[in-house]
Image (cartoon, rainbow, N blue to C red; front, side, top):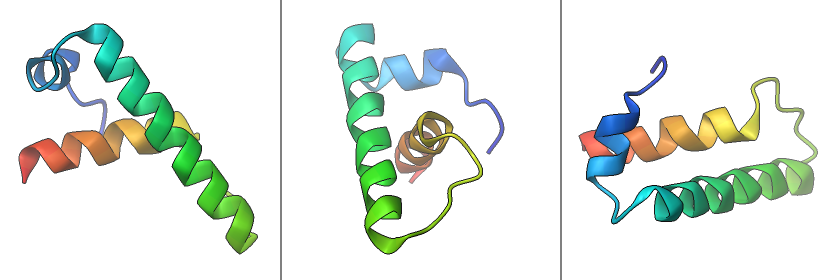
Length: 59
């Protein structure tokens, strides 16, 4: 998914602050999982987190 619409993400959260917190927490989890497995992440964890949250909304 390329650049999910911010309006679409915000509509499914209470406010922007909550959205930022959710994205940050998800990005940390992605980063920690990759570090534990010894994987190298090419794409930034924040981008991966945004795409993950956007795909959960679509489902």
